Length: 251
Ligand code: F6R
Image 1 (cartoon, rainbow, N blue to C red):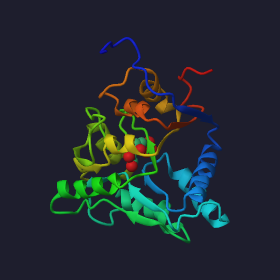
Image 2: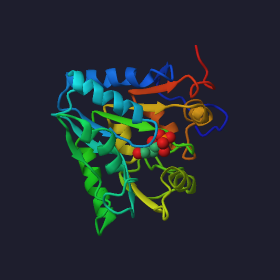
Image 3: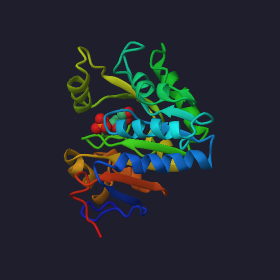
Image 4: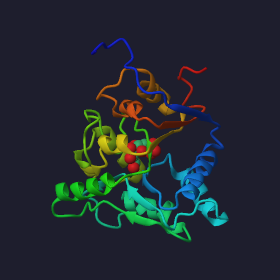
C-alpha cells in the first residue's frame, strides 16, 4: 500500500496533553517510577530546550529519593561532530550540566565518541551499546520532523551512524549557541534502535511545534518526517503541552 492520501495505520500510541506549567513534573514522576521498578534502567536521553524542565524536575526528584539513578545507564542520543571536547554546546556537556552532574548518585553515562579519528567506528560502537538493549528512549521533536539527528530522508531501519545535518538544524544551533562554525555532521542513534527500545517517549512543547507534531502523528508516515515512523513503536507515549497539541484531533 503506497497511497498518499490515506494515513498509514500505525500502532495506537498514548497521547498525554498536559499543561505547559506542569508537564515536566508529570513526566518526571513517570520516569521516577520506571527507575524505581527497574534500578538498572537503560535509558537514551536527548538534549535541547524541550527536556531541560524535565531534567530540573528529575534532579529534584532524585533529591527526594523518588528517582534513583545510581544503578541506571544513560546513553546519549546524539552528538555534534566537529565541536571540541568540553564545548558548552556539546550534547554530552549539556546533559552533564543539566542532569548528570547534578545528581547525588549519577548513573553510568555512555557518551558518543565524536572526537574519534574514525567517526564511523565511533557510531558503530555506540550502535552496539544501544543494541545491548534500551528500556526507554526519550526524544524531542525537531521543527523539520527530525528525532535525534535522524534528519528528513532517514529510514526506520537506519542504525546509529554518522549523518549530515540539515541546514535548519545547523541554523537552529547558530541561533541557540552562537557557534561561529556549526558542524555539518553529527552521530545519532538510528531509528532502528529507537524502534527496538522497550518504550519511546516523545516530548513536544510550544505552539511552534504544533504543525510538525500533527504531521508526525496524523499524516502518512514517510522519510520527510522521520518522527512519523515512531508510530510503528509498540509502546510510544507522546507527552505534549496544550500549545503543541493544539492542532491534533482529540477525543
Ligand atoms: C537533541 C536532539 C534533537 C532535539 C530537537 C528538538 O539531542 O536529539 O532532535 O530533540 O531538535 O530540539 P528542542 O528541544 O531544542 O526544540
